[in-house]
Length: 631
Image (cartoon, rainbow, N blue to C red):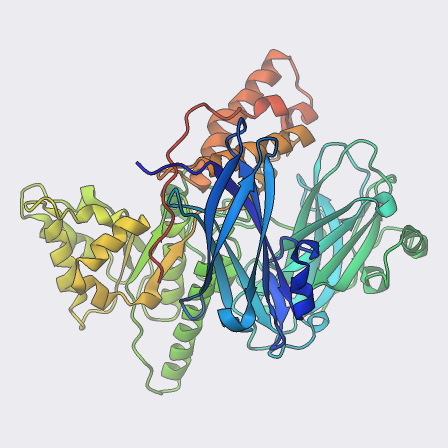
């Protein structure tokens, strides 16, 4: 059994340096949580800040850590470094730093990179982070990327937008900006993230968050209607004039002032009221507020972004609400079989925007859809088009949305005329094995027939491969699949093999027929959700279900998910784990407390308290090795 690392890395922050002098004082650089960086050929390198925890509180630790910077665009290792992490007995947190020079690492604008941090002694991956180097020469100035229409704020339990709101303490609210993109007909596969700076009254506290723009529905996509929302919590004594500023690559592009000490003022800010301040100061905020109209108003119709009073939450094709992460699930995989498919009116990039995380999957699938649509356009004009490889492999842990993405691909390929139906048939080893030995081919052929026109999705497909058992019936399933894959006359179906990365790699390497039918470009890595993404999934579900976290409960849930993530084992359920935690532990604890205290007011029925968040159990799962098989 491999040793468990005595340290854990809870965050990585980056900074891109454009001259050698910046790298000389690496600890003084302005690191933050941004993942997109605007760079040009003068890029000097990437600075990295690694924030570690000491898991052995009673003693100090010394660990040898390796850093591997992977160019995910070129699919090669860009650079590696060794790092010593020393945390004294009286320390719990340690910041370590590294620098990757652009020349030796071959850093290139327009490429994406993944940093993998390993504890070499324990043979354990501590954390992975992906960043994107946006090519400054390929796009106009960042201030011209987005055209801001309007903005406002809303309570987490409402869809209405307000110019100002009388705050309730210990409640969740959202800052929202509506805009259109100005990249033209060839936008990037994933729109660059934007930054919110929320200046609290007096400016002594500034909250900073980063988000990717999203778009809901095909109509909004065609009408170029995008938005971004940033959550924030209120607390007692923090009332007054706030200033919300939206930035792109550190350039202010919008901002508005709102007051939390007056009555609710429904509507949104637009025109000059949405322009960013030339420079923030409490005096400038007060001046902007004094110049704002005193009456409630609704902005006029925007040519690109139609604002409405009621902002609907995302919905799936069967009408059930979805969160802004994965579909409305108690079990992410099983529910996605029922309602995870994107509607026939929704493009794949739009549907993918609904998903939390999965940036590498989103990038690859968006590029894949562009090729599919391009081929269809050529075919519609009577031009010859290349034959795309359909069959794919999804590598990842449970609860990372593999079945959901398969349903989206099915709908996309059906719209493009590649598949006649686009449905998804889900099978696993138990449902493919026949009643009698050597009758597996019958069950497999039945599944392929049922999947005609759509996708045959085999979950935990590595279980079909048992090389140690010469009589294992799973080999007949694989042989039947290989025969069907070799039939070039039947291209009206797609095979997706899904499962854990290491086990799937072993199966893949020992079956040359599979390797020849599934190219590297069709191997998708579904990374585990990060701590922040798990928290985002939890907040999306609670918000949509009209639950509110007190400040203490918010901190407790964040700490619980951070600990669960740090101690996760091979069977960690990702999004499924979050839902099980909420539905089987937090909400029952809340119900017991509310009933025992005889409470029946709306605030008590919606507010989750710290005591409702279960503490971390004493059981610790063995940490699993992370993904070692890359496409």
